[in-house]
Length: 363
Image (tube, rainbow, N blue to C red; front, side, top):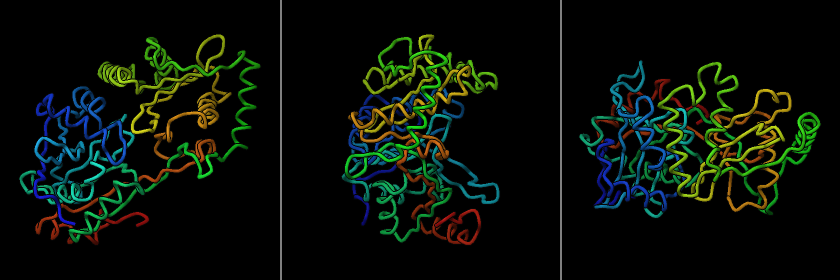
């Protein structure tokens, strides 16, 4: 399928994001084929301003007049790999970027992605390939990318495949894994014997929720190791701004498991497109023996049947045995690599085709 005649591909800087561009970006997020709060303006703009390397990021966009049809944050690299000295566009990752799927218009996904792969040499700053890390595989965006590439005679390669745990309903509306959740409920009763009654508290609109979360996270091993959010002023400012932005839109979720002495576990999630994306968790180290973080996951599973969200994504790098059994659904994730459609790019990538750098793990 050829790309649309009116489509244009550009690389935008942070300074290029005018109010009109931001409005078009928000409109794209509403009609995207797949939701991804990480690539929405309320997360990506603060990240570009405040997180390390953010000022180097460019927004790879496909436009049609004032309309925005695709967006992906990328780094323009002069050397794709140390042993592969070719320029490339690589999706930007940071500690909060839990999903790399670009925002793509649902009704124009295939021609839009075809246009992206045919970006003019100058627009892509000479890059010969596009790499997207942590793409949601098996979904409409991945399928559209494969179809667009095939229409151009391009092969998309996949590597670093894995699956992560999700909560999602089966065809009959039920869930599996109840045996494991029952064992976790017994652990909850053990916590109650030590600390008193355990209750699930929705703190999504609680003004103190952010401070409670930051204090809990920094009081444990992350604080000792200097990796807690509160250990870095810029990261703290980023986290607070993201919470404020999504909170103002009613799309921020904070939930805690509390005992009479206070919270023992907290989870922060962002809502997008009917899904809940669990970005950060924290727990009180004093109750570590009772696995409060897993108990929080069990609590979500127990309440899931009565919720309006379509799915919950644990957003970790791959399910641990317990996460995978408590949240029994699976979401495939992969890094994809595609040559950009020009004679030079095709030739260079073809020459690299037998190199291990382009080999596809499991492809």
